[in-house]
Length: 105
Image (cartoon, rainbow, N blue to C red; front, side, top):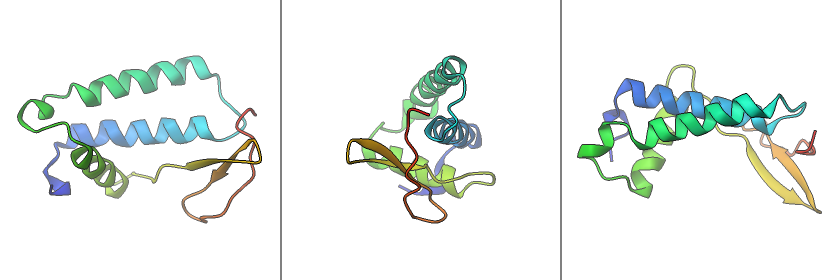
């Protein structure tokens, strides 16, 4: 699937989704209520966007949307998280190194 075939508003929804997801990944943890609600709202807007009426909601399509959002102006990669020795370790995309941040704040 071509990554530039997505409507701009759909890509921007995904850009915002990634930005909020990243914010929720890094301490100090913000007030989770509003950001969690916003992330859920964005997830619904992305899933039920009119674009998907004409295009299948497949894993490759969702991956392509993610890549388009990362490459878009103002886009950013998703912060990666892993569990190491029973704690959440955040891996920043720019450095690619573990920061050892506990996900509980």
